[in-house]
Image 1 (cartoon, one colour):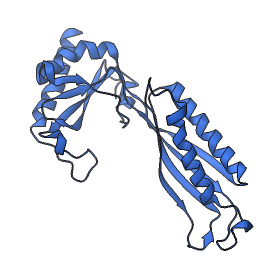
Image 2 (cartoon, rainbow, N blue to C red):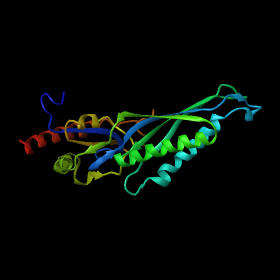
Image 3 (cartoon, rainbow, N blue to C red):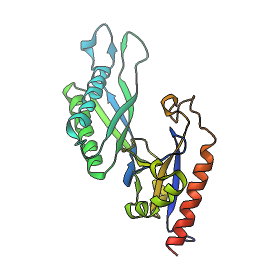
Image 4 (cartoon, helix red, strand yellow):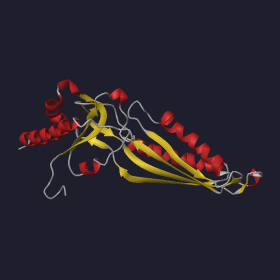
Length: 243
């Protein structure tokens, strides 16, 4: 779609519970790459009354979860870029008095560059395998990397098009924001053309606003005029500047 005809640039926005009539952006990497991880720990099933007769994957899994917390806290240079390693689900066992054979954990990894991404992958693998082996268990790590890449705003395009955003929102209402550890699918488009992605404020009172994925999230419909004007202004100005 983006090759026939060739797309020269792409612009996008995301509703955000910031102040209505404001826009926020970041040049370069802005939103994180997202990966899903699955850790399967296999022990040896036994009765809860005789734990010495088996290998407890629940205990091993809890040790792994604790160890993963040290990766970002102690190994990643967070003065350069943030990173996230979160375990969001853990499942194992069927009865209160049985030590199960297997526990499966799933989580998310968020990074902003390839070096940190590889560092985190290696550290997770090392911790998972070593902790399991130390207890006589086995562990398998799977990382699924096709969820979302880093949302990257091309610096030269961002600089060129900032005046367009300021025409719509006003000089003081377009500001730089910190890294966002949420992820987006916008990078699938910027694989084919440079892009600029920004946040469009949708809340009259951000102090009382709920986050995007909350069931109580509310977008003031007046934000639509800002979003529509901004995307239109960006398109018109880009065509004029690059004709």
